[in-house]
Amino acid sequence: MTRQEMIIATSNNIDDIVALRVEMQIEDWNNTLSKDFSCYSSEFAKITKKHLIEKLNKSIHFAIMYLNNEPIAMCALEELSELPQITVCSEKNGRHCCLVSVYTKPNYRGNGYQQQLIKYLLDFAKSENFNDITLTTNTPDAVHIYEKVGFKLISNKYFLNL
Image 1 (cartoon, helix red, strand yellow):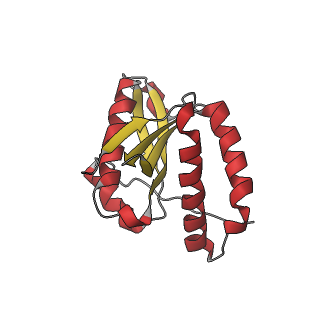
Image 2 (cartoon, helix red, strand yellow):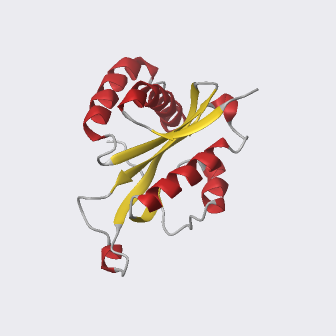
Image 3 (cartoon, one colour):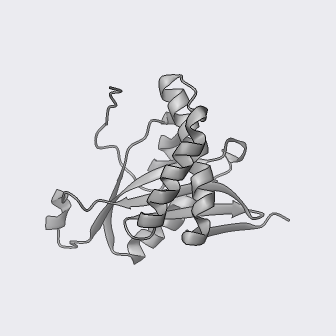
């Protein structure tokens, strides 16, 4: 029997997040720039781990899904705190964040895991007084997941490699 678990990550889960982010970044940038970035894996892992030690559960909150104790999917909320959003003027006046690091290992895609994990993270966001969440995606196949959980398209972002 398959054992599934979703958690809000703690410092005990940093290595799992790092491994998933390395895999995600290599895949994303290979698809974006058609260049293999795997030669940077260990350097990126060190930088990411250092960042998470400083920021996890302060300005970034990760949800991880495990199947039989293997991390297979993640997503995170990164709090927007540097520049306020116009929504700070609303009656709710809560916290604002971006949905980031949305990733499911390729062998586990198409099973609804990411949608379950995002819903789990959204419940966490509500409990932590987040008022609104934005996201940017370069994965057109994922748009239906975001729409199913209630996201609406409001704009697009572009990337420039200097």
